[in-house]
Length: 406
Image (cartoon, rainbow, N blue to C red; front, side, top):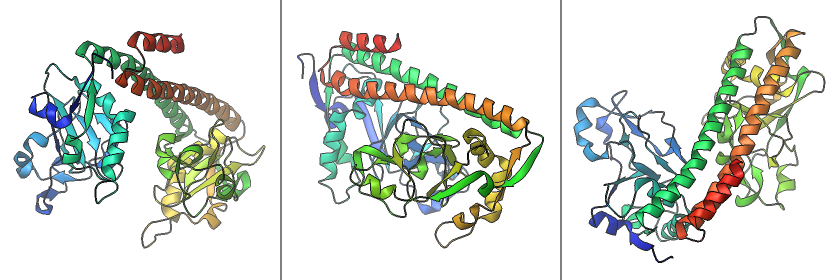
């Protein structure tokens, strides 16, 4: 810790009037309804942003009971149960909602010891994660943090000007990541629009254009590094989001790729839960399929990868999935043994080649943005703990960021 830094517990910051924090509203069953005031759940808090679905609601007549647990723009949220440690900031234009009890919120009061954005980055630092991991080990629930635990966390706080400088550096990286994400999202939307605009298509059996492979039916011991063990949660409308996947060891990798090892251009899909989701396997990722995941490998000369992906994601094939899904006692599923006989609509010859080239160009742009963001995220995650603890000076970090940007 440098001379301009001091450690404060969360509880001390609250007592000093610098911070408010608490958990969400514990809704009674009688207060829930089909519509009304939405509740933000743990699954809707991702690292760095919220993705609200709003599937649970407090009936309008009970809204007044929620009071300060109503979200405000600028609030920092932390998941405290299940997937512990996801952190996000409530955006300025956010609609009103309530926090669930498994989501903790922090609200700075504009004092002279901590600024909101700095606290957000501290909650994403190794310093926080090490403390939280130790606290989880002292509770009865391995994946749970209570308010007393959180109140005891020690936050390293430099002077306000240093906090502002740190957040400007990390914020610049986050802004560039967001721009790249929007470019990728736009390219993906254009790709989907191109396939939906096709007027002349012909049905073909999946088995005529691609081979079908199944993934493992169990889960390995997950690790923090090594080859990727993909998750069906990583399949996001055509793009593979590795933030939702885990790792496995090099020793385990041969076992979990015995059936098939995904390679660039394979179409990854879910055959149990999240049916209809799919994504392209990128070229620079070494991975095993996860549970409930299969892949389509295009046959040479029959169809190109990007076209097969978007034919799978097209409304016509999504309806085919819904029609042929086998209902189960716990989850519905796609019968993999029958999948090769299913029809999938592809553009007629001539149109097919032109469309394939356009889709591949759009996915090349998506891949470029994804690779660049991976580098930016790695840089941000490297700088974050060093800036928070004072291991690297702000001006040195600025030079590193400028070198990457140039």
